[in-house]
Length: 309
Ligand code: CP
Ligand code: NVA
Image 1 (cartoon, rainbow, N blue to C red):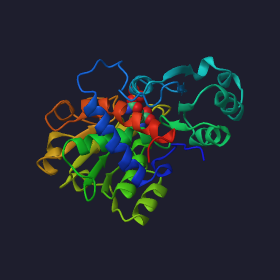
Image 2 (cartoon, protein in one colour):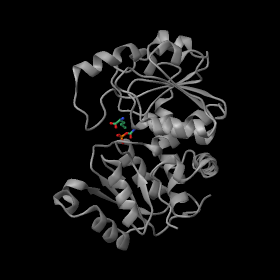
Image 3 (cartoon, rainbow, N blue to C red):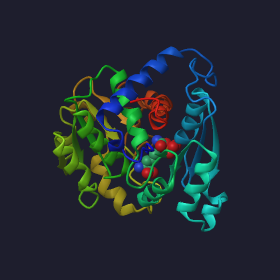
């Protein structure tokens, strides 16, 4: 069976734990090495990753490119607009053709149904580099970052403040798989897709939806924010206004546990979803979080290509 990574549940809790362990090991082993040097075991020597982008990216693009290089493989960058996909070739035909050339495909796109269709027709693993529905690779990096900073995942209280978006969906999915709880502070009209919370609850996690930012933040171990306007969404003053009470401020952080950590997938908008004092302050882990995209995705690639879990 071809291993696709469209959502975290495709791997499951045990495989995610194995990936997070592998990521920590690999990261430790290459400490201080030049960034372009391959890991000693070059586990993906000879492998090629195609990276398709239908939306902008800095972190996903560079971290996947470096990830495959460090594993001994190479990448091909495909901007969707320059592909025949951009002028109407079907997703299915694109999947069939790319499967004849490369060993894995990473795609960033809009509708989640597109990545499902790509995976359905691909004979090689397809990895989700963000869709409008979810961002599982981001959350692999977030989990790694939280663990690295001394917090074991089971029983943690995560708080989300802001829009009910793709990143939140993957956090809620991770909660069910890795046994932590999430309190979601989101304004009316911007709720997340309830199916993620339903599944997480069925897996034993507590997922609280509240309109009260303080209730979400109180006693939290981890506080997470993201842009209020995601890629592809219209910039609406009305939305920014509704989101303002959910801005992560120093006052809100003070309600969390004293050793609480702040996460943000980036890019950030200082003064909107988070104050400068918080995102650039001592509780913020954003640079480790960004770096960990690389380390976590190496393990995702190894899992997808059958070398882990
Ligand atoms: N966090 C994240 O996915 O960043 P990019 O949009 O820069 O890839
Ligand atoms: N929610 C954001 C995440 C960016 C990495 C977006 O979809 O634009």
